[in-house]
Image (cartoon, rainbow, N blue to C red):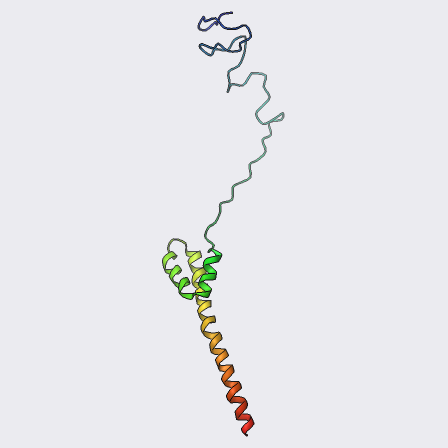
Length: 129
């Protein structure tokens, strides 16, 4: 058998000419749709909707940075100064944890000290009266 497009000899069972790639005996090349093919969306043309992609938000501060800001308040203040323009939500969260840590680290020991002084001197003053 010979190709109708280029005239080269081709095997009898070939669907395309090995020389020029032309279809033989009504074969369709890849990427083309035969005329009797069903619609692309299935039998009734329905194509299911693709769910929208939700963007990932990296604005929330890393948990490790929050914990570090609480236990070492200067870390939170420094992270706020560094990131306040690039990541404002994360920077504010670190600053907030730094301030809370600062209050806890100064207020709790002060309250413990005042309580101890009250116990030592307050009970003694009542006993002397």
